[in-house]
Length: 147
Picture 1 (cartoon, one colour):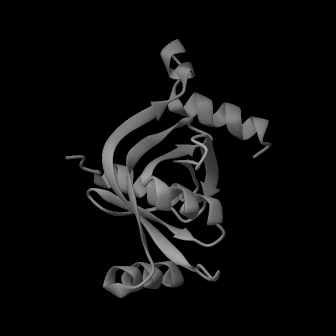
Picture 2 (cartoon, rainbow, N blue to C red):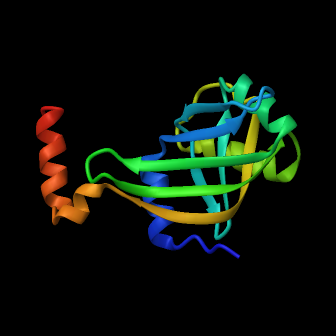
Picture 3 (tube, rainbow, N blue to C red):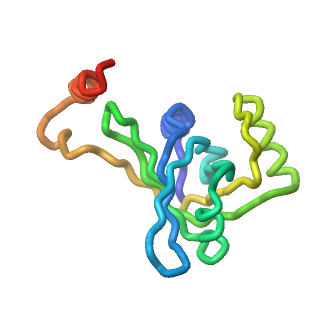
């Protein structure tokens, strides 16, 4: 069983933006950015279906999913693999919708994609292998983006 730590939860809930990979009906990959990713508990994350028709359609046929959340400055993050469930009613749905509304989401949410995490791994830039520190990478990329 995968356990999502408080550190990972804080990271993902701060970043919010992640990339969701699903498998299309023709068995090709579909990658889609999602700005509502959040950790629910020790083994689940969720995102809102706001404008995700292809992602949702793919999950109806194959619930396998991978989500990557990466800090663009530190070049580190997490890869989550799991099984998705599409929910659009009930207590879980209402609770998650309430969280999104409280956190400022104003868009209409069609459904929630609830993901049971089966595998979790850290993502690190190869630059760490060369001896770069997180602070050096943050400085480098902030300079690149002119922050």
